[in-house]
Length: 389
Image (tube, rainbow, N blue to C red; front, side):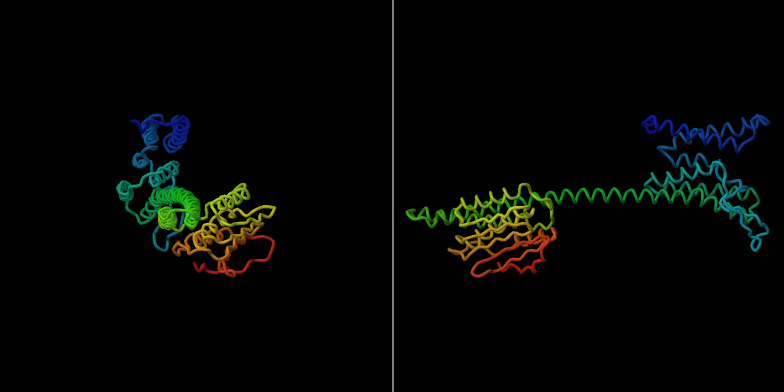
């Protein structure tokens, strides 16, 4: 009984109006209450009761309403959607195609709701078999003429089958739309997780590289005991190994999740350079006035991390201008301890590509240079080289 209750006043008003419209159509099909009140009471009143029950159960159980309205189905064959001449095949000329009654639109509506709301197919199949049996009985009771068979088949197909199939199609389209929306939400969550993971990778990798630089500086400091020098060297190696394990755990993230520029980017780049200088790196910054590319922070961070790992002690020059970021380091002053990987640079290359720019990375003199160019008013930069590291 709970399913028969309406959830809102709007549903109650809708069903009341539906019953009134269906009742008017039923009254139009029956005897005139003024000239034949007895026939009206015998024929129309029971049909009204049947319609009331159908409307009552039709919202939660549209298939039950469809079965209840079977006596009001298109079984008269007197009026139709079209009339055709089949004298070349049948003795009769006026054959009704898709017979219609005033109640046919209501029956078609419940057939549509059956396909729209019912996921299981076998109850509808059973109901349609029952409908077909009723149609066969009606045709046989009227003499079994071939024209009647044509009218009955078109009535069943047009009133029951086609609306039901439209309902099934609508249900599947809505299911696909929900699945697409769910998939889009899942992808959005994955992109956000990838962005967070990439930021963790960049930030922690940068910090670990600075730890390695500080440890290397301690290792070369005069006046330390051999045990302290050994401990500083082990700390430098441990930081390098931790950086590589961090890359392996997080992996290469190719989703671009922060195309919007960081604000204020110039302050963040300056802070990165200051921290690197405080850790012992020999670094200079040339920050041009004007808007700074949104990827400047990530480019500088990745370049400083690589310089600290692959060229310890080298002098580094950072130049940031509108539409271009350039980081160059000289030759290393001590033996690099990091293993060859290039995953961070490959991920950065993909982020630059998604932003519409190009990345050039390769040897420059006795050092290494990284240049990122983003779309601007100037000429397009040359194609990037593969990172040899």
